[in-house]
Length: 170
Image (cartoon, rainbow, N blue to C red; front, side, top):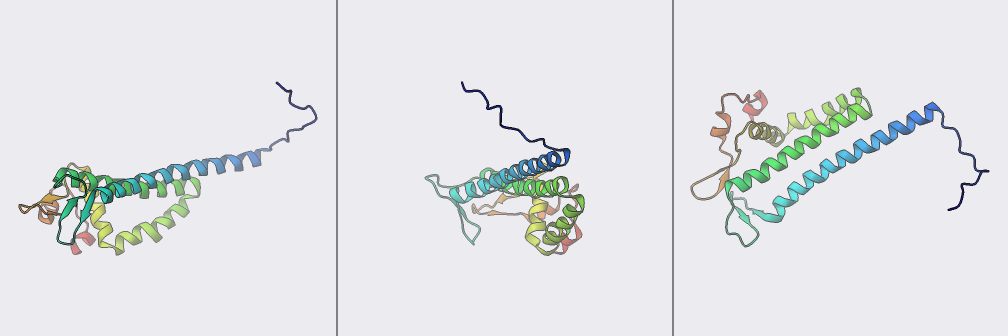
């Protein structure tokens, strides 16, 4: 094995450069973790799209040889999608606060997350369904004719789930 040449000098890394590199590596690691959460969300969406065909008349059909889907399978897909989406949004907010600044994360939340919540009924509804399912309820019901639906009377009637004013008005 060859010896390390003695005439090569390794430069001294001062504390400032070391701190910058440490922060950079920390940011890259946090970004990588957040990217993995995005990949999990994409995976959950693609699992649903790869397995199911959704029609406008509330029919959802299995693409494989299986004839029909159960409400357990549909709820499993939906809960995985909305939970991984919420986890991704939370992780982005946390990563920005830890790696950039709390002020930047707060502004990001105001400009993007809260704005989407306030503007889009679907965001509020999925956020509510995520909380609903995390408290042990299944958001999708199967009707007698085999079609799937969100039974809003059942969803809204759960006593300990608070429905926001903006959600009620939608």
